[in-house]
Length: 400
Image (tube, rainbow, N blue to C red; front, side):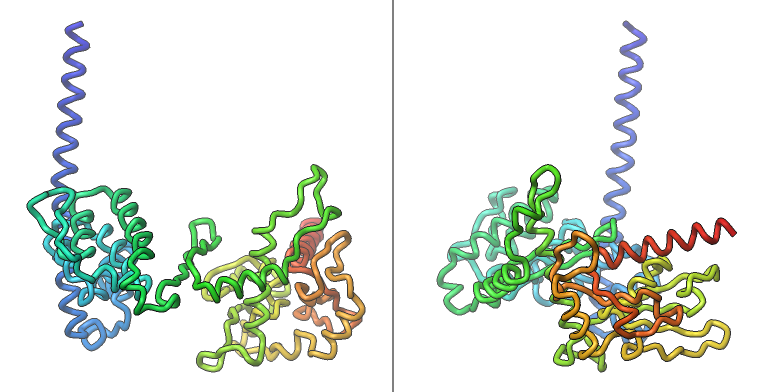
């Protein structure tokens, strides 16, 4: 019994020692971040990140010059960028009272729409006591949020901000001077698995337009589309594919918006030997990020991709541009007339409008862009056939 008591006391003492060490370290870290934030705000106000260091973005400056992590640099840059708007929150961060990440989350949420930003800065009719200290009066919602950043865990802060956004709809006096456009927002973020998370709220007109498009592009599934268990295809999955087709089709339209002469298309960089499947040891790049050779061959067929193909030995660009690899309007029309039922894959019911032209003999291997060498496949089966082809090639290579 005495031994157990000694062991329990020893564990308790060790836990207390570790707690004290971590509390002290966290306090030091937060204090250092507060000093960094104050310096970055000064640098931003004096435009030093541009004039003295040559960086247009605060985050890039912090990561490249001082080796901050991307997350920390993003949080500090977000607060500094909005420092003239949300002074109460910035003061909470610079003073070290509130954690940098919580304040960064708060200013991002408040700056998401003009309506939320205005609501946060509009004074209460009567100052509101802080829920954490009755003697502290909050003049605006922003001051109240600063109290949450200082005293509450992240989940409570997140819930309070969600409640604030919900209460905004009840502020009729404020909304009288605001249109629905000031309330709508969209956020798009890449996740750890390479997928993208999409969230947002749309105005009535925008929402109805999108709903109409999805219903037009994705009619309700028919009973003959049910799987072996009798379950119909999931409508959200069909909506996601319809959105892809909307973006891909618009990006290649001559009427699409342009920036520096380019529409919303993706850039693929690869040398011809690698694209032909030769073992070069080099990696294709999509928007600067490495991808597999199989995916590069598939993407090189897509209308929404602009391939930059070059000769590795000479460094010269190979002129296999869009005109050479994609069917023109007349050829596309001919293919659609011949494949009225849609995707050529057996059993697939995707409509012809959702199909992509696939070269039976890949254009990088010398295949012509003509009716005899093209079939129309939906995006899913277009990818499948490229994966199948690369596997077959690997089998041949291993056999040799």
